[in-house]
Length: 416
Image (cartoon, rainbow, N blue to C red; front, side):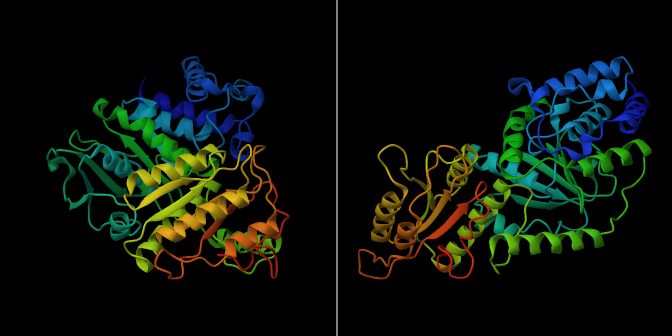
């Protein structure tokens, strides 16, 4: 298929697409078959492409693409498909992100676990978004930095080469066989990763898993902007961020009102991305304030699967971090289990971080909150008789947002 055919077809699709491709951020169950969610949309989309069919009625009955907007959605899938066609590669080799940093972190994580070397290439200046000291010290990632003037002169490397480019033509890639991963970053839209060559196919599932756990795909509106720029062959213009700042103030005010708390709020792309930020921020603090001490994340086995998976992946990357199971099922009780574990970790002089849900899934019971407060504020001592480090309670209250845990004088307001 020619580039012009691809671009012309996408132009027609953008003009005729269903309205919910922009506004809907979850999957339609009437068009969703979970085991085929990663492939079914594009397979049927390609059938429409071959038939040059861009009718709204045909587009609107395409199966749901992926799961929520973490793994993707119609417009991110089409964006990735289009870039793949223009670069003569498979569509799953192109992965879009709302985040600017996660594609780099995804490759670094896999290479750390596989004990493989990584070099990060860039032209002019290293992007400010990469805080290399934090990546090395807090995340435990290993890599070398290399500034290059000419991509065509990049030599082969025994490991993975990542090239990061900050550009307004987000969808344009200049491929080199000696570079394994190309990442185009845009200040407002996020980033697009191209996995170069069949030798790197083993990374694709792991990178997509990181996108699902730690961030989301490029949003529907931003994917639409990128696609429009692609078909018009125009550079992306700087965005007017005044509306964004206004909306941010409104959201933060709503959070303060809903939670009855004056605590500074941070907003992320999804719950897991915020939880990931919390975990890594606490690890950073622990390394600074309590160097050399073991870091323990206490997690209920029946906690949401993404939470458990994320915590264990963080621990797999860092020798100082360990996940401790918090028994809550059957005859076990969250309060008694927390008390027992905190006593043990205090004896070990470890740093306790608790991740809990109240109640975020049907298997989680609400504990006696008065007893929970007593257990979390109980003063403990180490095996040498020194005051133990008090725990930090990380609470996901997705399905009971009207409970004011943090308001003045409320049940958890005095707890870290």
